[in-house]
Length: 223
Image (tube, rainbow, N blue to C red; front, top):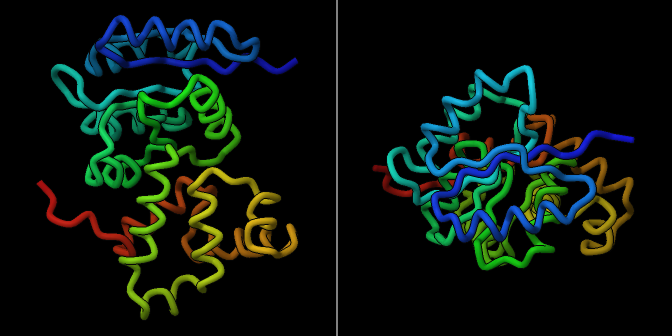
């Protein structure tokens, strides 16, 4: 039997922490191993648990006292590079979404999501996918299609590869992408492999983040 998925939560509202804690407690294959009200405390805890219950997933709020969730993503990425980060927040601001993805978050869920959506999101990122709230995913897809320069599209990704990458960003698995595009699963596998080779990445979240870093997507005016 495989080990339980170990989860750390960084959230400053006790009431919401209780809701998430109860949801995870009901899952036989998940365990909430730690929770913190600030990113500073969470980051300080990592050396102490490095040889213990290192989290597989971090549920990270953005609006936190002290260091914000966005500011902390690179630090978590450095300290625990194999840990997936899911932003769990009330913010659906375009800038927050794009920056979180660019900085390396594997998922972006709104606190209005259902318990099932949260659990499915955790399972998706643990399996190597990207988990995005449906509203966020729609925005990301529209942004991806609208801001990708045609000349870059021709040199970097084909139209079908871009469609495939967009559906991966929605959290769809290869079989679902095949059904959505009306092509075979083997063809989807080929497109995914081509995307990873062209962008020099190993998984879907990295592919999305790389698209931002290469300038295929623009964050607009940065702070």
